Amino acid sequence: MSRPVMLITGASAGIGAATARLASPDYDLALNYRSDRDGAAAAARLAEAEGARCVLCPGDVSRAEDRAVIYDALEHAFGRIDVLVNNAGIVDQSAKLTDMTEDRLTRMFNINVIGAMLMAKEAVIRMQAQGDGGAIINISSAAARLGSGNQYVDYAASKAAIDTFTKGLSDEVAADNIRVTSVRPGIIDTAIHAKGGEPDRADRLAPMVPMRRKGTAEEVAEAILWLASQKASYVTGTTLDVTGGR
Image (cartoon, rainbow, N blue to C red; front, side, top):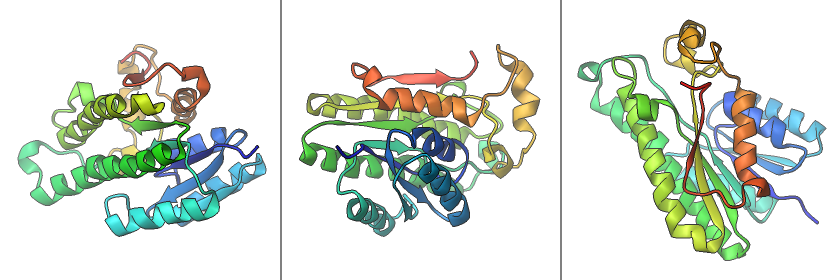
């Protein structure tokens, strides 16, 4: 039998790349990236060494033409999709709302919310046509319930939208045996902090976490893969915190 196919958006680094590495013994992989082809290719090499077939799917999830290219590459390589890990997202420089521009907010929501919703739409259409279900795991953030005031209220609001979308979509597609969940990472040691202008943020905030440490991308990936698996066959419409208790 052919192996199930997992599409991971934002797979060139961090949680996306870790998910690809850990999924490779069990899934064939479509790895999306926007600009870091080298990172995505490195993730693919590691996955292929573990037996996965991989295809790179370049594209910006916020652009309709790019979403079409991503799914065309997936279909040409594998002809189906069983799991979508909706991971692509951005954060901006730390700022108060009074310093944020309309362009910043538009870009944030176009990628983190609208792009994620439309990637999920395309996955649902294909899973329904296949007729044997599937799983969508949206990557949220603990910021969705913490608010991130004085830092990233735009990012936090976009992730809160993802949590609401997760619940709503799960209700729409549960009868098709398509499970929709989200994962809320906390303080995780990835490059996203540097992209937000605070490369030492994970180390600085680790003492605030009840477990007194930052998490790893691999710990988040393990949660994603559990939700994707049949071990979570009766789990849908919910959000799993991977936050060390924060």
